[in-house]
Image (cartoon, rainbow, N blue to C red; front, side, top):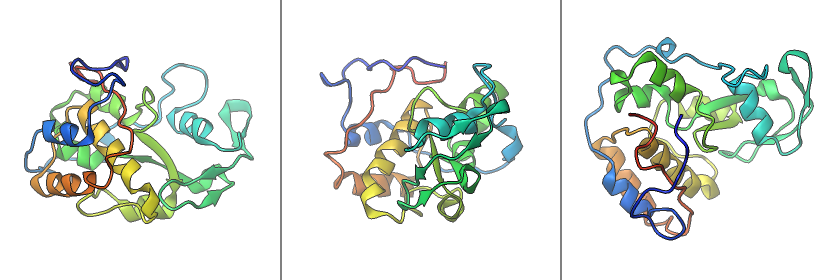
Amino acid sequence: MATIDPAPGNSASGTQSLTAMIASLPVADEHREGYRRDLFRLWIDEDGNGCNTRQEVLIAEAVVPPRIGSGCRLSGGQWVSPYDAIVVTNASALDIDHLVPLAEAWDSGASAWTAQQREAYANELDVPWALVAVTAASNRGKGDRDPAQWMPPLASAACTYVVDWVAVKTLWHLAVDPAERQALEGLAAECSQTPVPPIPPNGNLP
């Protein structure tokens, strides 16, 4: 996967404005034909440390670290679901949300990727904003909808969610559909003070 370095032409802080990032995203109609979730291989152990992607996210995002047992079995710990601020003390009660859902990624360009690229997307750990541990209810309420159709129920989470959505789409060279672009532009007006992460010049695709 790519190393995250500031892209040329960004500000001294290494970031673009949110509106500039949205403007740079290609606009295209979505196409769901051929999508199957199993085309994205999930929860690999990329670094061979015994913990798969799901477990790595849970460990990284815990506000009280869990105990890590044999086979990376997690016990104890505490999490705060960022979409609804619900405190969770049982790791098995959490879903790992692909911030830009797999089906949405497929619609927006991933249908043309190789199996290896789809696996890398589904297990993205190089940045902390692509995968998020959230309550099952919020994840399933979101489904595969984009910000024109769904936003986190917690109002204070809106700007972070929008910024992270745009960052994922930028990193992976994914398109937005016209309604999604319009919604993002409207939301960006309220989120000018939310930091935007630096994106490598070529993203995560060749």
